[in-house]
Structure formats: C-alpha cells, structure tokens
Image: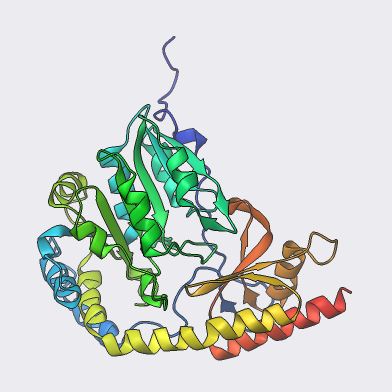
Length: 367
Ligand SMILES: Cc1ncc(COP(=O)(O)O)c(C=O)c1O
C-alpha cells in the first residue's frame, strides 16, 4: 500500500528522544544546576578570550577540517592529527560513527545503564540496539561478548560510564577487544577520561594506536567547561577517519568552538585546577551522602549516582522534588533504568554542601 504521508525510516519512531537535564528550579531564589555533568568551574579564561576574539569574524566560514584544533590536540596528546576528527560535541561523532557503520539488520551492543545516545544513534540507522547486562552498575566484558553475533557491527562502551560513574579497567577493555571479531567497531567513549584517577585506567588511546577496529571519542563539554559550544573529537584508525570525514557536515565545528577549543586544550593548568576540584569534592560528596544512609555508586567521573529507598516519601522522585524547591537541580535517571536513583554532578563547594545539608533534612523530615 502507498503511504499517505512521508514515513521516517525503520527504527526512527522507536526512538525515545533524549531529554536533557533540567536547568531551572521554579520559585527558587538561586539555582545550582547539577543535572548535566558540566564543569562547576567553567572554561579556561583563555578559551573565553579566544571565543570573544573569534566573535569578530563570524562572517567567515570555519576551516572545515578544523586543522589547527586537530594539530593542537595532536600536540597535547602526542597523536597524529590526521587520525583525529572533530565534531559538534562527541554526540555528533557517535552519530556519525553509527551512520557510517550501521544499517538495517545490524546490531550494536551497549550496556544496561549505558549512555542514552547509543540506542538513539543505533536506531536512527535502522540497526537494533542489543543490551548487555551490567554487574554492580558496571559494564561486564563477558556479558558483552556473550551478545556478539554475526550481526554485531559495533560496541559502544562509555568508560567511565554515564550515569553510573563506574569504569572498566584497561586489562578488561583489552580482553574485550582481543575477543572481538575484527569487523566489529569498538567505540570507547571517554567523555570523562580527564577526571579518572586510577592506575588501572586508560582512555583508549593505546588500543586505537595498536589496532584497526577501535575508536575513542572525547569531549570539550566536561573538564574543559565548553558544553555550550558543542565540541568533541575522535581518534581512530585512518580508514575510520576517512569514512567519517566523507559523511560529516562540511563545517560541523563552528569558528568560535575551534578557537576556544585550541585555547582550552593547551591550558593544562586550568584542566589541573578542575581535576583537583573534582578529586577533592567527589569523595567528599560520596562519603557525606553515604553517612546519611544512602548508597552511592563508586564513581571515577565528575558525578555520583545516589540510590534511594522505594519507601513512600523517601524515593528518588521525592528527593528530587525536595531539592528542586531549594534550587538544587539533580537528574532523574528513570530513562536509564534507574528509577530509584538520582545523578548529581560535582558542583561548587557551596552547591555540594547545600545538597548534603538538604538531603539530611529530607531524610530527617521524612522519617
Ligand atoms: C558518556 C558520554 N558520552 C558523550 C557525551 C556527550 O558529550 P558532548 O557534549 O560532547 O556531545 C556525554 C554527555 O553527557 C556523556 O555522558
């Protein structure tokens, strides 16, 4: 039968659209946004200056290949700029990878509480997302491997993962890679890599450098504090870089983002400052909230997952409403199959202390 109106391709209408973290708290005098894992310290002042300077040239197209930015990233990480692609956020790159490598009948694996962009990007190509269970809110190599079939074309692994904050040690990442058929593209999403302070962690650079089927994605939205500019990059084998470059928008990264990105990646002092802030407040928050009797999943990133009991008056939703009235905006994670948890970004000292205080009140008041 002929359709009576245009129909999107198979899979598109099965997508649950991504719902970003709230940014407002109606009625609250001050708002602390802790719902999107943004940097509480903002970008490098040098990145802001570069952004402002770029504002004087908005009539010009940007360099479509973002060569200066790729070279700056290459210098900082010791990578070949020819194997880097920049994108409008790492979301852009994750979608481009899906578009380049997935199609009808294919499967892409991600884990139960994996980042929601993976199933969205997968379904958008007509392919099917396959979910590998996690153990203790952590991706598990054997569970992923069990689900690899001849249809599997891609594996998405966020390391550390959002919204759980957990990570897979490098030995296990290598074990996963070693057991994959060579035609499967292994995408390691290292959006939070800069925050990880663990000896057994590696962001993925080494695996990309030594194999033909691994890609690592990174973002300027987290430690670099440039989420509003939409900037990310990938490092991959030359043949993957070639495929992505053929389908990406010709000017997918804008001029101010390129300028600010170069300044940000070179300002390692600002990155250290942000990392040190996180390394101080991440354990503090986990301990203080743990002392209140709430379970906090151990996190290696810049946010924590807080678990609430299912009891009426004490649920994650109740806590969210309570905090929101005080201007403390956390993230409900029901869409991540975590209806009894809230995700909180590490904030400024003031915000962190206010959340702990408010949670103490919430638990006391609802006893
Ligand atoms: C695991 C993970 N990957 C990728 C992204 C997307 O980041 P970007 O702002 O670069 O698109 C996020 C953002 O929250 C994330 O949590």
